[in-house]
Structures are given as C-alpha cells and as structure tokens.
Amino acid sequence: MNDTPWLDRHQMAAWVRFVAVLELLPGVLDSQLRRDSGMTHFEYFVMAVLSETPGGTLRMAELAAATNSTLSRLSHVVQRLEGRGFVERVPCPENGRVTNARLTADGRAKMRAAAPGHVASVRRHVVDVLTPEQTEQLAAISEAILQSIDPSGPMAAGYRRYDVPPGG
Amino acid sequence: MNDTPWLDRHQMAAWVRFVAVLELLPGVLDSQLRRDSGMTHFEYFVMAVLSETPGGTLRMAELAAATNSTLSRLSHVVQRLEGRGFVERVPCPENGRVTNARLTADGRAKMRAAAPGHVASVRRHVVDVLTPEQTEQLAAISEAILQSIDPSGPMAAGYRRYDVPPGG
DNA sequence: CCGCGAAAGTTGAAGCAACAACTTGATTCA
DNA sequence: TGAATCAAGTTGTTGCTTCAACTTTCGCGG
Picture (tube, rainbow over the protein chains, first blue to last red):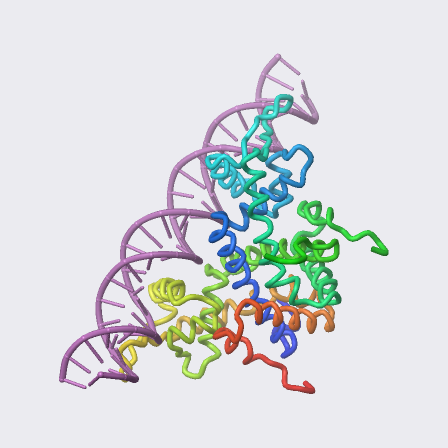
C-alpha cells in the first residue's frame, strides 16, 4: 500500500499538532460567531461569499463550490437562512433547474454586524499569531494540501480569487 | 474591538486557503477510514492514543485531553466503541469517580488493520505533499495557533509527547 | 464529622452534516 | 420527436456533536 509506511519524528510532531488545530479551531470559530451573532461559521462563510458577489446573487452550484461544500449541505443551510430572512431563493427564469441564492438587506445588515467580531477572532487565533513569512508559508502549505485533495478542483475558483498578484 | 480590522491580500489569500483545508481535510480523512475500516477519524484517534499508552488504559479525562475533545463527546464515543467491542470501561477501584478506558484485543487488532491505510491517506494528502522545510513550518504554525486557542493548555500534553528532541 | 464546592462522568435533547434516494429540467443523439 | 442521459436541487434519514442538566464522589474548611 505504501513503501514507507510510518511517519518519522518530525512528520509526527507536525501531524499531531496539525490534527489538534483541525480539531479545535473550527469549534473556536463557531463559538465566537454563535455567541456573538447567533450563526455558524459555515453560515457566515456562505453569506460572506454572497456579499462579495455583484448583486449578492449566486447559483447554488457555484455557491457550493465557492464554500467548499456539497449541494446537499448548502441546500439545507440556505433553507434555514431563508427561514431567518437573510437569504432568498429565486428560481432562474431562463434555466428551470437552477436556483439563485440572494442575500437580502437583512442578511447584509447581519453581515455588517457580525464581520468585525469574526475578523477579530480570526486575527486573534490565526493571522496575528503568525509572522508575515509564516502567513506566506501557510498559504503555500494549504495550497499543496488542497491540490492533493481536490486535483484540478472545482473549489479552486473559490480561493483563487484571492490570489496575490505577482510582485504584490 | 480591533485597531486593524480587515485582512490584507496576503493574509486573505492564506486565510481562504486555510479555511478550505479546514473544511475539506477532515472529510477526506473520515471517508477513507469509514470506507476501509468502518470508523471515524476521531474514533481512530481515540484508539490510537490508547494503543500507544502502556497497558492500553487511560482515564477518561486524560484521554479527552489527549484527543482534544470534551469529556461529553468522548463519553459518547467510548460508549459506542464499547458496544462494538473495541474498548472497555473499567471503574477505577481506588478512586470512585474515575473511569478507565482500555483497548481490548479486538480493538488492537482493529487498529493494526486500519493503521496502514490511514497513514497512507495522511501521507498522500499532507505529509508527502510537503517539503521537509514545510513540515517544520507546519509544526511551528500549528504550535502558534494552538497556543492562542489553548493558552497553557491541558491539551498540550497530547502533542508535546511527540516533540522532536533538540538537535534531532 | 458534616456540609459544601469542585471534579469526573454520564445522559438526553437539539441541531447540523453525510449519504442516499428522488424530482425535475436540460441535452444529446438517433 | 422521443428516449436516454446528465445536471441541478431538494428531501428524508441516520449518526455524531454540542449543550445543559444531572449524579456521584472526593477533598477541604469549620
């Protein structure tokens, strides 16, 4: 199955720490948002992507790709967000099988209110604890992992938008 | 709340990629283990920690710390693992409120069967896609994030065991 | 030695995610 | 044009996680 099965000490040290981050960080992000804004990190992410889109509108499939999620998961979440009045679903007139998700005014207001606290949390736990070099390293490392997970991936569009132009 | 609210382009590029990893990697690890061995990554992790402990036994509270989880979550999981015969719960004789979790022979066999595939998956998606320098960087970055999440943390014991001795 | 608070676990309910099945609408191709 | 196939979404179920409440046990001060 693999010629070099186990991990050496360096790899192990990195992996156990990384697993701990994988396990703990989502919970930290979730609690801050849940406590301060009554929403999940994933809900925030969905609305954030919509809010950065011209017209605040995106097809479900594109929104799913941009948020690294499945259509099923997104469908459930958008349903809940619609129930709370933050998003509305508009069937596309010229293509009967697509649904457009659109951020409502309430949704936009909600985001304006939630964003500062969330960004502060991201800074506090990730961005501000890394040096500029480490930030670049994290980007490169994440990129490498994503490529192995999602080769020539549909998700790529989701984060490539935030590429730093060469020489930036 | 914060003097420098938003993220610059470099920070943003790193963050969106990292969020994608946070969102996708756990699912990848889970599916491999579920498909090939019928268990979740967290179940694997719990049993892995037990299997590396002398006697295969650990108190619930210590096991929770070592696996970055809450006592509640662990209790549910151990209950399920006990039902499948991989772990057994033994009340501690000299301290009436502690429960010891112990890996059974079946559990150990299960781990022996599951480990190679899981390690291969970890290699394929993380370890082998990074250079040795990036592996060190990931360890340092994870360490920094963990410190901000879990200052002077009880979890620390969980991964410090895998420290690389100086000059190693 | 008794009462009180904290520690260690467990349990039940509620919410979210994963998976599979299903519906409906577009495309292709004969 | 009509069947087959595929794409886009939705829905229901099942399982795991979280959260809060609760039980039991230990330690400590009066």
